[in-house]
Image (tube, rainbow, N blue to C red):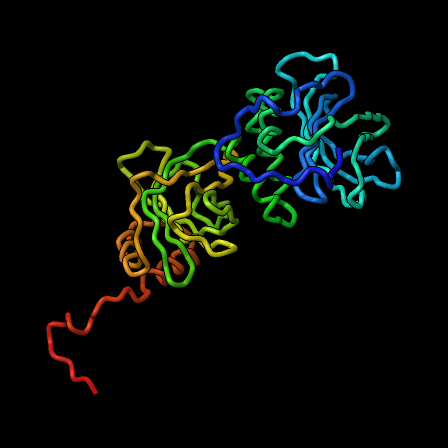
Length: 320
C-alpha cells in the first residue's frame, strides 16, 4: 500500500454506503485492508485472534521500523478460517518516510502474525462499511474505541474528517437541537433536549459544512413533555475555529453510554446576536449546572442586546 499514491478522499457528511468498486472484502489467509488517515497514520483492518493488549507492529516486517499500537478486537459474527476475531489497529507510519507500506507484522508476547496489504487503500467510508461487514452488532463499540484512540492525540483536519465519518456510522441518535443563537463574542448558544447529556463542560464535535472540535458548557432543565430519562439542555458552544450557526447540522458527543449525536431540528429557531441574550435570560431561572457554568450563562445573558433601556424608563433622565 503506497501512502504517497493514496491521498485522503474528501469525506462525505452522510453515513457511509457500500460502493461497488470498494476493495473486495477478501480476508482469506494473511491479508489486511488499510485506510490512510493522514501522511503518518493508517488504520488497518483484518482477521486474527483476540488480543486487546498493546502490540508491537513492524512496518514491512522491518525491526528498525517498529511502533507500538493497540488492537481493537471483536468476535466475528460469522466463522472464518482466517481467525476468530476481527481487529482494527491505529498504526503510526512516520518511520516509513513516505515509503510504500506492503506488509505489517504484529507481535503480541511470543506470538507473531504477518499480513500483506490489499492492493489499494480504502476510503474511510468504505473502511467503516467493511468493519460493519465483520462486526455486525459490535460496530458501535468498535467505532467508540476507534474514535477514542484517534481523538487522544493531535487532531489535523484530515483526522477530524475521518473521525466525523466514523461517528456518523457508530454514534446513536439522542435528542435534537431546537434553538441556535449567535453572538458577537464567538460563542454559540444551543438549546434542545437529550437523554445522555450531563451538566458539565463537554468536548464535542460539530458536524456540518466544516467539521470542528468544540467545548460546550452545558446546563440542563426539566422538560415535562419528555420521558423520565430525557431533559432539556442549554449550552454555550465555543469552537476551535469560527463556525456559522447556520452551518451546524449535528453535535457529536461522548455520553454516559458511548458516542451520541444530537441533530438540529429542521424547524429549529435561529436567532441573531441581538436576540440571543434574551433567550438565555428566559431559560436561566430553570437550568441547573455547576457554579462556573451558571456564571458563564449569566454573563452571556447580560450582554448588550441593542435594547434602548433609557427611553423605556417611566421617569425623565437628565443627560449631560
